[in-house]
Image (tube, rainbow, N blue to C red):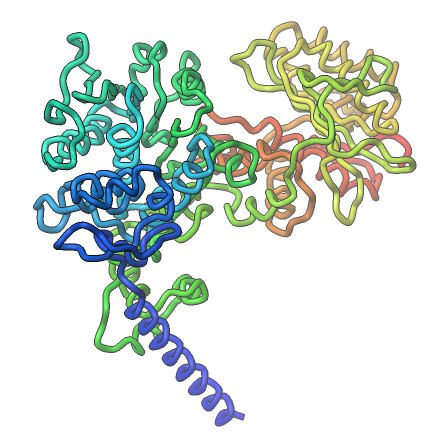
Length: 629
């Protein structure tokens, strides 16, 4: 038996080494595009003779040969080059653009790497189809995503459109200035023979402003700004917007990244060659950038998502004289990289680079292998991101949006309504309605009413209401939704009602619950114990304290890990990703985030799991369902 095992291990090791040699050979044999000749470059191309003595032939985009100016351009080298620059971004980049090389510090032509070329394909696909160009870019380090965005916008302004204004908005003004600095270098080194204007290309101040520059000869303006002071940009006339590092934009009650972006991009018309690109490295989950990425990834927005994993960047590899030693020493994470298609050189680079980071999270934030890894929270996260993303696969747009009427018998569709339905009530189906009580004002926590199918084998979210509302109205709306869902068990989290946290006295608030119970019999209640009198009694509602909250969250952790229920709402998944464990052992949402939806899921799942038993409940505050099941 031992001999058979050794032979199997030897065979697997030999096979791994052979696959590694094949992978490295394929990468070594990958063709290197030539942007001057157009070989292996982006798009459909035709081989043509050129009027240039230094370039007897070239592979040019087929749109160039279909251009009405092509026949005349064939008789003049200058005309031919200018026409090609208009149709061939890669040729224009190699011929006209100079950027600073990070390794040598010298100015060199812009030669696209594989990741930049993949991004260019997406941009060109939208441009050539006549669509407005819309993209969201999740960045890893060291592949030049921001450079390509800015140079593509410059190409449109210099070769395609006059009076075509752009804005660059970054998290801080210095970052925006660095991006515009690439444009300044471009104009300073622009070949004179490639310029079609009467005056040399350069930036000039526009109307004595500090943050706006105009390109001579093109009447195109480039405006600079930061998320810290965006108000001066709101009235601008923009055809293109480059919104950089949006995950790091400051958010406050007065100004949010989403509101700033909507105000800036509101003036960008839905025209061909108009362009909006939102780009950033990840900065945790639940923020505007993360939400927009998820919407784009699911096809719900007009933004084309693009992410480049670190192992697609050819420079990120470190060859070794003994690749077999690298492969033999792979840990679990590296074996996953191997399954993703990495070779020994890439795994060795990752292993050596990892030593300069204090944790795997820090390494994965800078050099992620997928978008889930990029957005993964710190080690204080309660729910594993990969488990949450598995749960997210079932999230979808609701069947209807509207409100349940006060009788609890009818649902009225209304796009402004707060109730979202994924499953209508089914005959004979049992449901649990869980309620988390928030505040009345827009700045308070949300109030959430969740409806869950009470299927013990696999519960699923059926509907949800979320908004700000007076507490008595919230209780009645909860009752109405419970009636609508087959007289569901109604479980109201009672802490707010018992403490008067958002106004009113505890007695007046509890009167609300008791009054609802008089009208609606299937309400959850818990048994309480009065130490002074030695008497036990019942109170309506689920009380959350240190013991019950730990029970709720631990149960939810298990459900999320095991895929123990079906989620429908992306916002619920976002709350799971931003929920963390505090140093004192308690749980809570990250600063500025919410956990209202999350708590309704935890309460509903706890109640559904405990539906089978009805023993007396001990004094620690756990409840039991009262009603017919």
